[in-house]
Image 1: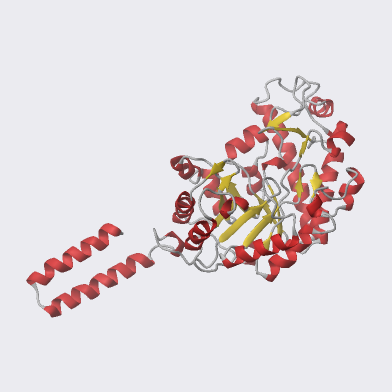
Image 2 (image 1 turned 180 degrees about the horizontal axis):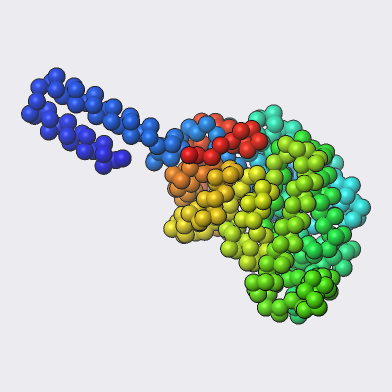
Length: 419
């Protein structure tokens, strides 16, 4: 486009030397017409280096309680939602299941875990989720609670201590899985009692809160090194004429069997959600398919083909821009885009990893260039509170990304893929 405009200017200068004013006016009009035609041939949100004004675009952010205190005080939360609205965000994903606790008062959790609410002082005497829904909807924000930990729990949590039979393990009997410096354990997603507990938590949220959807990620799977507990091995043997599962946790058949079991549960959860509230969207925010399937047994590509996902927010957190771009081009990503809104999760920073606003802007532009449904940032604190750049500088950068409001791309409200 830049080369084309430059050519037009040079062409006009050349013509001015050789032709009359009348001819020049004709050429200028013809040139402007050509530029207008070319510009209109691009989708609005694909125009390079220009602030776009799409009819709809996901502009989301995850609100977590890890390295963040945004959820722990009513006014702080209210102010955060106000600022996000002013910056033309339209969607928030507040965590509701994390560190082995619910972040909302839960009768289901109280019965199974022994505590109905995360013990963090800032959550006591409040219903954080109710506040997010109420304040968020006042601002026109879409509110989609995030079931962040899935089947994972801290190794020292009440849940792990009270239900040790629910935990799964490696072939050598060990259970601890490191996540950074934290010791995690995993609930066995193949046990009916575990499945019922997880489903009951989900249905409780859908039933009791005026939410717009609910989101899972690949913690709704299981690290492929796990699954060697007595219950799962016995179930596998029962379905394989007494044959034990492979000691190789990456054995294709063993991976496929476990992933298919999790898919069956995903279908059951989807059905339960829709039976409770048919217009509650089911959102999934996984890692790229190869990592998600092979190492976390979460086959989101299959879930999408089965119609179990109504919004996909693919986490692409790579430092390398070329790798980031390549992840947007995989066949399963393109296939999903023809069925449902597919957006890209962009890393805004971590506690020990600052990301410049310019890098964030570049990634947003690469997503827009390819006509994705939008972007969501991980996570709230790193948008402007946790950065080497000044908060005002970060917010100004975000204003450039989202200069005008845009509607949430809702599949149930008639969203259509780009042609």
